[in-house]
Image 1 (cartoon, rainbow, N blue to C red):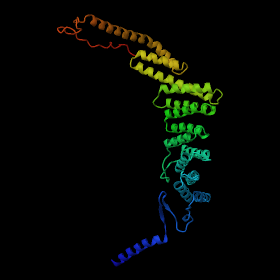
Image 2: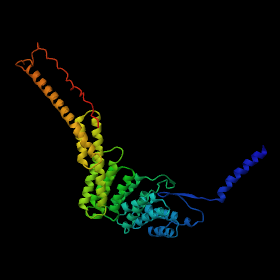
Image 3: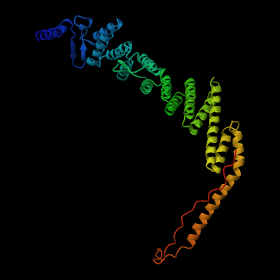
Length: 383
């Protein structure tokens, strides 16, 4: 029993002795938060009384690779002297420190603060370029980090938002057109093709006076609609939109090297339109809707007269045309009978009183429910 007590007292003494051999002072300063300052270390004497001197401490620490101390000193300049001439440079240095520590998301946000609060910085274009470079890394698949430490997954929504900030910070800067196009690329990676087209069309409209950017944006928009048109949920309107954009691209930029690819895309989409109309015609034919079948077979021929479905469409139209005419005649006759029945009821209606009301002794004739036309006894003709 005493041996166990002695063991516990010994462990307790060791725990109490550890802080004496491993000092780790954590200091809190109002407006700065908690900081760690090792006893006797190089970072224990870093505060200065002037913004210029404090920024110099941050710059010296950055030059020798002490990014934590540099971040702390630069943040102090921004918080203690936010209106000084050195605050903008200090905020920029904070971003540089985070970027050097591979904390790109924090670096991007620090650069954004610098551009927003201090728009007259001499190196505005450089900061904007660094923001765009960071966004490019995320667009290439770099993972975002939880709390700046734990890697998670690539996030194209966040990347798209970053690129949007780059465009907003300098829409007509060198980075503006490239960032606007990259927004469309990020949306394509999310398979959100309508939003990708919006981004590309915005680039084409805003930078119409830059032929290279406008041509690239128009072509990418057409390709995005093509991807949407060829997805599982086929949509004829998206194929038509892609064809229209490709035609605009060929007409506006006839010397572009991608014109042959645009023509090939148009041919592929027309074939897809012909196939879609052909399948719709078969659907109507399966349910004996001869009129609808003939309409869609004609539509397939209109889309592409040389498609693999063209010959079969012509054959089906030739066979179904008499049946469609007969079906149309039945519908017309049925509608004529309905109109005649309505007219007869109006003629045989009871006389109205002088006040405009019907006689109370008269009973209105019961209205017979409309009966549908008789079912067509004809069967689907064999192919």
